[in-house]
Every structure is written in structure tokens, then in C-alpha cells.
Image (cartoon, rainbow, N blue to C red; front, top):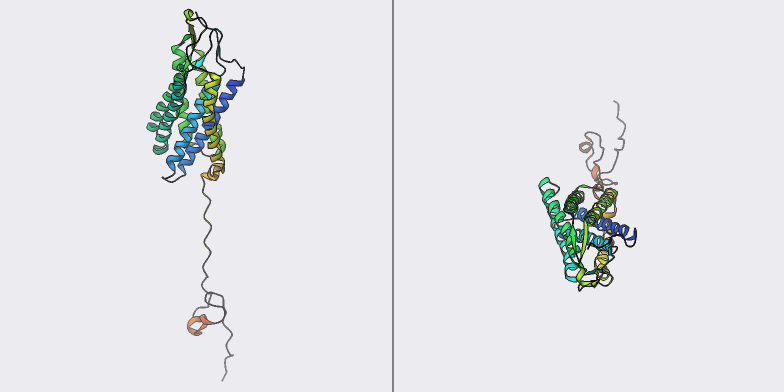
Length: 299
């Protein structure tokens, strides 16, 4: 028997909130990665790690915010704590691999392809590990076409995000890239969900296997990633190099050094004709025009 699935149990609230989380994580991650390119070697790993954690936390939060609207009419849905935590760890670690590769190797074709493939597969793995953490009186079945499309979207989105992280300059362009990334990541999620069916276990009635309800496990777990995203937002907002827009890429010209005292504009031969002129009142390097001499005597 097939279960009746409703992925929008709260209407447009969950997809809009999920999209906002994806955009927030992507925006913070992109800005932190850009900031790492402007830092010396001692600060670079820290900015890259902060960016990876922001992107991973944003993607994970997007997934479980969207899953708050998931409902199966015939059976309650609960979640396994260990697999839920595992999905968060996978999201942060695998995104971190891609971010560090492009952070140190740049946007070369080889680096982007390797990092984008790794990160995209990691994002897809996070999604399906999170789905596997669900416990219900039934089993999940997926359409191979939907799964393949979701993985391809994840890889394409990850590659585009990593390219933008090291190539897009300026605050507004990177914000636009984050909005596009939010669409891609959220689209990957709902593409995978579109091919999902639930095959109910009739023998167990409507009792779900052991696990915790979404309200009791997912919502408390979101406090950590949301608090981290808030902290990352504060760091980004108060870092001047991240809020100056184009100024972060064009350094201000150094102020011109004050001119040294110019050499005096003495007439040619004045120094030899007037010994001690450099010691007269007014000091060396200041205009000190010669005094007219006595009138010539005629004989």
C-alpha cells in the first residue's frame, strides 16, 4: 500500500523559509571565502573553515526546514538522532573540502571540476542521509530519474558556488550569486522529493518505529546551526573588508609622501659669488634672493 505524501503541509511557509536559509548560508560562505583571498596565510584557513561551515549549515538547515512540511497521512514520521547529526557533519566536511581546494588552488578548471564534483556529491549525500534518518511505518522508494537529476543539480550548484566564491568581486554580485545558489540548492531538494514514494508496512498498522518527532529533535538541532549562521553574519558585518563592496578589490592609493624641501632657486654662480648665502636667515632650501650690490663705479 502506498502512503499519501504531502510535502507542503504548512503551505508556502516551509519552502520560503528553506530558501531563505539556503541563501543566508551561501551568502555568508561566499563572503568568507572571498575574505580569505584578501588575508595572509595565517588567517586564510580560518576564513575558509568559517565559509565552509556557513554553507554546510545553511544547506542542512534548508533541508530540515523543508522537511518540517513533510507529512505522510497514514503514519507518523520520526527521526533518528545519530543519522540526523551525521547528515550535518557530512554537509560541513564535504563542503569544506571543496572550499579549501578552490581557496588554495584558485578557479582553475581542474580544481573547480574536482571540488565541484566532491562538494555536489556531498550535498546530495547529506540530503539522502537526512532522508534515511526518517522513521515511519513504511519504506522510502525513489525514482531513479529524480535522484539522478537531484545529484546533477547538486554538482552544478556546488561548482557554480565555488567558482563564484573565488571569481565574483563586490558585495552586490556575490549577493546575487547567493540568491541563485539558494534556488539551485532548494531546487535540488524538491527535485529529489518529487520522486519519493512511501510503501507502507500494513502489518504494523499506523505505529512508527522508534525515533523522535521532528518537533523534539529537528527544531532543537537547528538552534546550533542557526546560532552559528548568526555569529558568522555578525563577523561578516563587522569586518570592514567585507562591507566595502568594490573597495575590497581596489586598494586605496597610498598618500603621497610630503615633498622634501626643494633646492633653492639660486641664480647660476650665486653660490660662488656669494659665499655663506646658505647660512643666511631663512635657512637652507628656502628662497633667498641675492641683495643688489653697490652700483658700479665709472672712471
